[in-house]
Image (cartoon, rainbow, N blue to C red; front, side):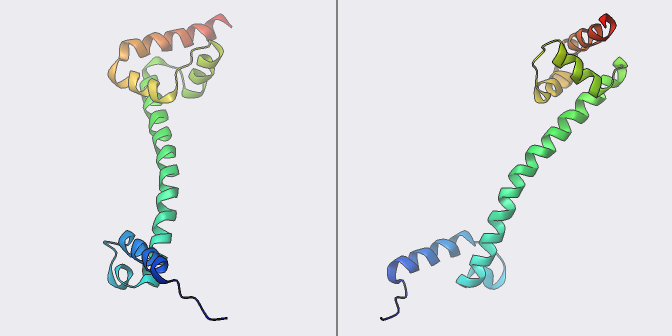
Length: 120
């Protein structure tokens, strides 16, 4: 049986990969084999980076909430526990935005959390 090299379909695939490798240095933006290696690696890093971004944002929100709580005399873990027990369903993103943009409302939430511990 004769060997099939791909024809137009193979050329399209190669062009697509080389187009994705635009901006890469050296032979990585010209030669298919090198471009394919670079594109596969770049896409893996992009996928991991999207996950890392979510982790970084969550860490930022927690840091902001902790900083806003220092004046109130309650630590982060007790605050979050109190919110859960008082059925206040605000996520960390909203809480951090409140701490920055609306300190009065954030203070009200903190007071409700403190009241939970005083009641116990």
